[in-house]
Length: 203
Image (cartoon, rainbow, N blue to C red; front, side):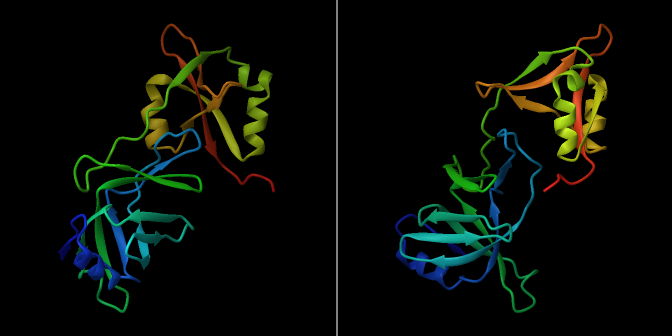
């Protein structure tokens, strides 16, 4: 293991010897959906593509590329348990938090090495609608065209629907870009509009 201290050329030279290694990042890249909401955490391997005197280039199989400054890496740690064959594995402890949204990748400084930052705050407002709103507005037809099934769920059942059954809240922007989810008021237990992908969107 070696420690990468800001301005340490010797440690950067050591990292150049790790080109071609596959590494897991700490903190793990925070993946966001199209609305900026966090997706489930996935610990993935990144390939060390190149290391120059100024930056480190990492890539992964999804096609994302992460460019790090030489002062973004705190230290590299080997992973001998996974490096039993020709491919070498390790860990990169960073001083930045990577974020991924669609094809975009960016970083923000962390407080401490390897410590994750919270995802960006996104404000979602409930829009009070009638039970027939999905069909009356054309929203249900639009979602079904993209391979989703639409369903109203009791708010008390949301944890089970989302965590165990794969549903997610329907969230849509208005003309000003503000995000809304859809609620039907009920004196006992409000309804929240959910969606779940059951097919593929037509090409």
